[in-house]
Length: 121
Image (cartoon, rainbow, N blue to C red):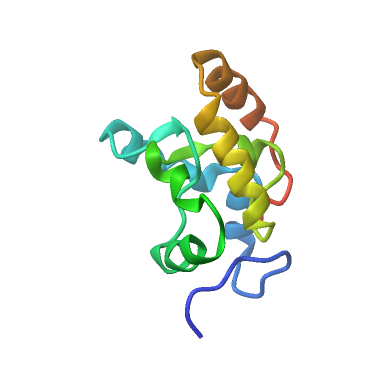
C-alpha cells in the first residue's frame, strides 16, 4: 500500500520493537549519522521522501524546516508531536526552532528529550 505512518497498537510491531520504540533506544543508530555529520543531535526530525513530496505541496513553509540539518530530537518531538500527529503543528514547532535557535535552546531540548515519551509508538 506504500508508506504509512506508525500508529498506536500497530499490528506490524513486535514486543521487542515496542520496547525499543517506547524507550527511544531505536534512535541510537542515528548517532552514527550525527558522527558522520549528516545529522545534528537537535533539529527538525527527517521525514521519508514520499511524505516530503506531499507535504511541500500541502503545507505552507514546510520546506523552510530543511534549511538546517535534521536532528535526532527536536522541539516538536519533546512537545509530544511525534508519530501520527498533525504535520501542520509539527511544522510550526520546527519553524519556531529554526527561527529561534540558540545553544541554550538545544540544551533545553536535549534535556527534555530524556523524558519525552508521549506518542512513542
